[in-house]
Image 1 (spheres, rainbow, N blue to C red):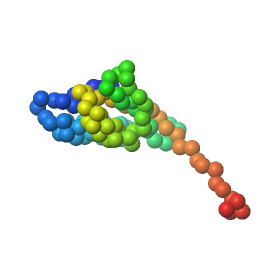
Image 2: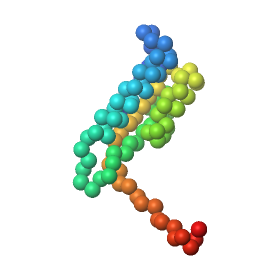
Image 3: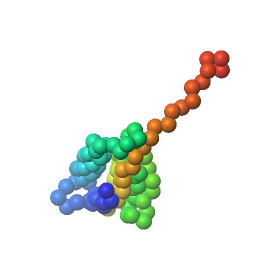
Image 4: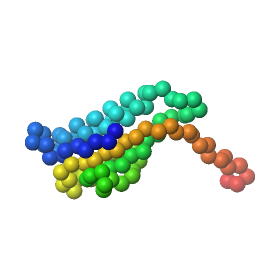
Length: 102
């Protein structure tokens, strides 16, 4: 999904527009996570970017979407650009510490 959302919508207040954007992004991520996983893949991971426009977009973690929207509203952005692309993820296991080291 690559989309620019208007924050200052004449139909809604900015706070209401932010909530609608959050809702749409949550639905998209939830829908992507429900898709069937390819062979050898543990979960769906996401590459995310956010900014005032596509050329100003910076990478962020999918869990930071809500904070990014709150930041955009606080800074008075007219619109916010989101790029969320699903990719296969494979879990990496952490090395266990032996009890003698503790």
